[in-house]
Image (tube, rainbow, N blue to C red):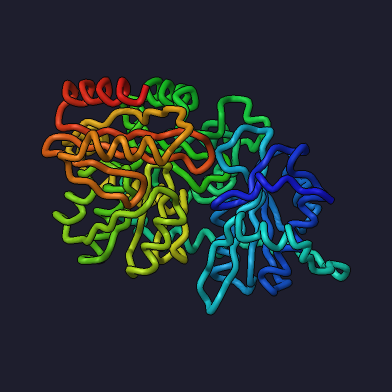
Length: 432
């Protein structure tokens, strides 16, 4: 059977169902996964997408749960590998696989591109004697995520939580009675059609509903999850979206209070306030390439306590160095409730600079354009960790190529709004 090789991405497998990813493709991916990992005891879960049950049946069946439940199953229980059937925040017509295996009691992420060689060489394992077993891991998983906080230190507040018709509502419904909070649920019913808004919280249209509800209810703040609940975003009491690098600082402060001197990993397009505050609070900040897998790799190599990036992924050492929207939510609740200020006031303290929305430009020759940037901005401090970053006294920018599209992505931050607008115009004219 011919398989579309473009579905094997840098970090996972992702494509449109059923054109690129169907039951036969899923079956062969499962066979190749067994061959690659050398294990047969595999946990498999799916999120709420409509095509999930069909793909799940093609490999195995455990249940409809967040991605981080699969992480827990492999990390804490006796599974040796895992496959999560999800396309994360992609539109409803997509689905995919996130894959991992346990090696020497540590979890390794299997990238989609790693499996491509096995698929291309038709290296499949016979799966004639598969046995399926359902396992209820919820109780153990909930005890695990609650271990990150002290419930007695959470004060009563009113918060709105938007599950985006994904799988976050399943877990929050299980733990809400343990939290001294008034939780107002939005879109808790799993629905793979995502009828209320896109499962991508980074789209402006996705946060309109929760922003309106926070204001109507006069809530203290809110959270919105993506489809498979591994990403979370904070919304303040005014209904304003809080950028993920600022949320990273709230999480880092909580963990550094308990783990002084530890490493916090952050990616190349986070605000420069991130390393400044981390070091002020007694931590060590290490900058990484963009991409959750890169943040995690740096965290592991440096024995760090946590890492995060602008996409809303936050990973924790005590969660097998894997990301968890639920753990992030619980820590944020405790960190916010211990502060007498409103969320907008807490956030304002962490925002000494002004950063604009990411700019994107179509580029045919990436080598040529990066060379031109290097030449034009040669008077600034340059580094090439991820694309090119150029830093000046009162502003900086990063230019990097997209991993999936022929686009050059530009991030700009400045000391003032006026300077930001000036540099946005300057760089836009240059790239056009």
